[in-house]
Image (cartoon, rainbow, N blue to C red; front, side):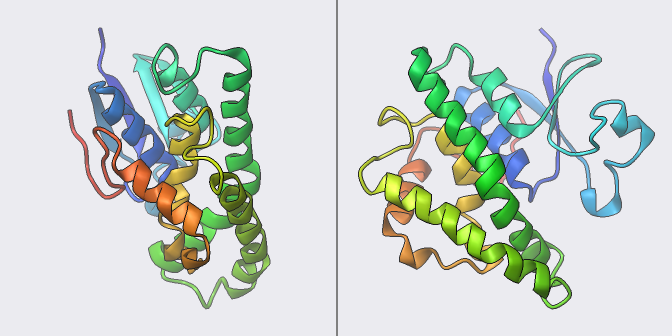
Amino acid sequence: METLRLYDFLPSGNGYKIRLLLSQIGMPFERIEVNILKDETRTPEFFSKNPNGKIPVLEIKSGKYLAESNAILVYLSEGTEFLPYDRFLRAQVMQWLFFEQNSHQPFIAPLRFWISILGKAEEYKEAIEQRREFGYRALKVMENHLQSHNFFVDERYTIADIALFAYTHVADEGNFDLKQFPAIQAWIERVKTQPRYISIKEEVQH
């Protein structure tokens, strides 16, 4: 069996989702750093792997690539405890994955990128203000759900939690105040106690 290759940018929450799941499944993989700050995803070679020119990309075998972090999560979690077998529960997982990509990530991740990764808070001030309210709305949806649930689906840890955890637990790096969300804070701690947990800064090489 060929080793999985993950084309990734270490600070990326979308890349982290995949590293975290692979670590928790115990699946060996090779990580290849692609520096998005140097436009390394905008080369003809990278476009041949993902025409959308974004990381993460998972190379399943030579010439066989899968892009979009949540699609990769679904692919890797098939047949594992991280994706329920029950049809309705699976659909609930998908519901949270779509929520993460549509209502959460577009408003929380860019602020962290502009403020903490690029260090250009002033330059992006207007865009930051435009997104902040929607970011807080997404966090409120999560908070309301977590007030009566330990995890997002079926009271157990799934890829729905992994997808939402990636950018939520570092939302403070985009100057979001998580102190007003005690249920989210408790859930973050629960995720961190899961077996084979790794932090977003850890370079996992198997």
